[in-house]
Image (cartoon, rainbow, N blue to C red; front, side):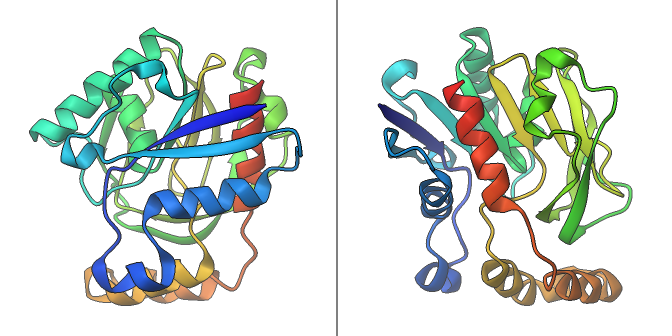
Length: 243
């Protein structure tokens, strides 16, 4: 079985980090290939630089889409962000399998009737425990979580303040109430970054240190000593897409 995944690249890795860590589509490719435990499943990847206005000629030329994070905000009125919102609405209307990560998670809410705004707590950084919601509806596939908490690396100062009306809240962090959502059986989104390695997160935080409050930066760097569960989440993503 072949599964073709379209990576919607919404940002570029900062130039001096690319050599050691690669661009975001490569991070996802490495993550998902490593998490693929099915020898019968062949993964292929196609990148669409949506931040440069590049989209598939046909929405069905890949089996599913994954949207990366971005330093941009989903509520910006820039042409490429507005066009991306339209594309997400098309994916939803077609019930195309779609995974949103960070900016992608926020875009799901913003494009489909919810809201994303700057977080009242400011930056959320580091490895954070993500806790499942007990009221998750069965149709949102909470069996992916099996009621267990998991940890992901976070890096955001915007967050979803109102989920899309059609979505189900699946998990939260200490300062991010809407950290994981699902819509039916075709959209799954995470505020955290399963694709981030500890090394990349540390390098990114160091590079941006001047942008962060000192205490938040210090705590984030210490938190990177904790084990995160990006590989586990990658397995959930594959299961969600192939189910």
